[in-house]
Each structure stands twice: as structure tokens, then as C-alpha cells.
Length: 484
Image (cartoon, rainbow, N blue to C red; front, side, top):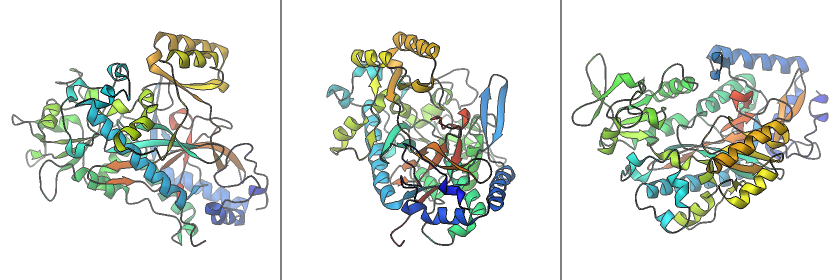
């Protein structure tokens, strides 16, 4: 198929599979050679097989609209993204370092607040944080870990260097799609998995189980672990069900649990109450317990915070962990790594302007057409301004929002995000921008996924990769090239 890569032009961006001379990068060589060998009709057949597999496996996500919730099939591109295992080893160490420092930071905030007293982070940043929970002050989770599951968003710049875009520490989602992407790709391109160069991702659910089991307050061989979901109408319900099934644990809603007079948590079963040791909760803090937070919440469990504070149940992630899931706090993470670990950061932050700072704010307001502006605590690509793709009216709206609440906004340069070949139409590859969300697990040990969830901006030139905003996804291959 001579035209598959010969006509491919990544332009000024770093392309993850094809270099500036139009040749395959080392981790992608076998993949691209194989794709070149397929006739156009066969490539289209593989694409249709992927679509059918998504439908057959019921892989979907929910988009919230004014017309109601819409379930959509998971958008998937069959051309994987490849990363050299040597590069990934360094990146994984950087992710471990980052989460370790963030957990030390969270624990410090709910105890001595040394980082504030020592001037590492301004007090008002925490005081004005929407996710700081006074109810958590003085609580000491096992191992000092608050964020047990973290999804860190990475991007690569025009030089191929990894940068951290943000840390997701509240209820990060997407790992099920990482695992399903691999399952789909094995169906579509089975021949490429015959050797062991593509590192596996399948250990995640067993690693997650081990991470959660280590949190059990009872020293028993088989602690009772459950996944707590808001229910079938939540956009990530597919993932909640998937992870519960893969770990072999119960998937429950708040009404399935209760807290007794001894502040222990039980689930209701046909055989009577059964004590629960660990809850992997996929419900936001404010809906976890109507006694402690929103009194009208029907999603949570009355008394759950009492049970957690008493040390009778573990919650992952712990309430209050979201204080570090703040795009303003993000700007201070390199300093937090130096402060808590006495190490230099392995992974870089993207240059960040804090609108709360007068000098930064003036710069941002004068350069809205060049910058990406983000609210401090939104997710899913909502509430952003992508300056180069915005109108004057949108820029004026954001200028007013920034002036009204400068603490709530940061701005970053518009990065030249890396691209990867994406199948567009029949037998045609075009570059599309992408990011990567690896997942890090931490309790008594720390695990990092081999790669992560690659999200792709399917629209030409777009930088927005979120599925809720029209993005798609690819399998992520960490390729061991030492024997190649």
C-alpha cells in the first residue's frame, strides 16, 4: 500500500510514529511495515471489525446534553500509538515521584500544614480551594496515602518531550477503555502480538485489587472490597461495572450499604449483613455521606464518614484528596516534589500563568488569543478557552470571568501537541493530536500502567481530545526495542 505513509505529512509537530524524514520511528517500524502490507480493502475490513467489536462488547460512554443523556459507542482508531520502553521507564519513575509527593502534600494539609508555614504554597490557595474538606482534618489514612488511584494527563511537545498537563486525583476514569482498547486491537491486528515486544497491560485489575486489599482495616486473608457507583446513569458506569467484574467484587449503590451503631459498614445480602472493609468509591465527595456533606444526597451512605474516621473502613480515593486535583495547585507541584522528597522533578510541568497573580493576570488578559485558559476544578474539557481557535466574543467573556474570579483560572501556552497517524476514510492516514492518561496506584506499593489511555482529537487541527468533546482513542503500545 504505497500511499499509506508516503503521503503522510506530520507538518511542524512531533509525530510519534513517523519521523521528519517520513520514516518509521523504531518502536513503530514493525507496525507500519505490517499496515503497508495490507491492501486498502483489508485495512477497511479491519476498521469495520473494530467497530463491530465495540458494539459487540457494549463499550460505550455517556454524553450529557441539554436534550438528555446520550449513550455513544466508544470511538476507536485501529492504528496504535507506539512509545519506546526505555522512554517509558523514565516516565513511569516520574509518575511515581509525582504521586508520592502529592500524597505527602495532602496528608500535610490535613495535619500540620508545614508547606504553608514554610512558604511553599500560599495559604489562600488552600483556603479558597473548592476541594479542601475541613471534615478530613486530623484523619490519618493507612500508609499516609489519600489518592490511591491517580490518572495523570501527559502530552508531548514538538521535541517529543513528555509534560504533565494535569493530575486527576478525585475519581479518575478511563482505565477500562485502556484495557478494552487492547482487547479490540488484539482482534483487529492479532499477528502483531505474536512476539513479546509489545508490553502487556492486563495486570491492572489485579494490581488495583492488591492496592485496595492492602488498605483493609482488618488483618484478614480476604477483605471485603466493593465498588460504590452512583448508578447506571453516570457517564462512567461502564467502567464501574467493568472493574467490579474484573476484580470479582460487588458493584453497589449507596442504598446497598449501611453503617451500624459501632461505625462499621455493612452491605445488604440475601444472607444478611456482611461487613465491608474497603470501598472503591466512584462518587464525588459531596455526595458520599448526607450526614457530613449534602443532606439531600441519595447516592451516598449515611454515617460513612464516621466509619472512615473511626478507621473501620477504607475509602479509595480518600475524601479530601481532590484538594491536590486543582489546576492552581498543579503549578506548585515541582516545588512540592523538592520540598517533600528533596529531589528534582523527573517530569516537567507546562508553563502555567496563575490569574490570581496580578502580573500573570495582566499577561493572560493581553494574550487570550494565544493561550489556553482553564478553570481550576473542571474536567472533561468543559469551561476551557482555546485561544487560537476562539472568537473575539469568547475572549471577552473569559476576560470578564477571569476578572470576577481570578483564583479560579489558569492559562498555559498553546502547545504543539504531538500527533500520530490516524485512519481517516478508506486507507488514508492523517495526523491527529493526542494525549496520554497513565494510571498510578499507591498504597503499600506503587504501580504504573504500561502506557495508558491515549485520547485523540479526531477533528483535523483540534487540540481537544475528550470523548465528550468529539475525541476518540487508540491502543497504546510500550514497545521493547532492545532486541530489534
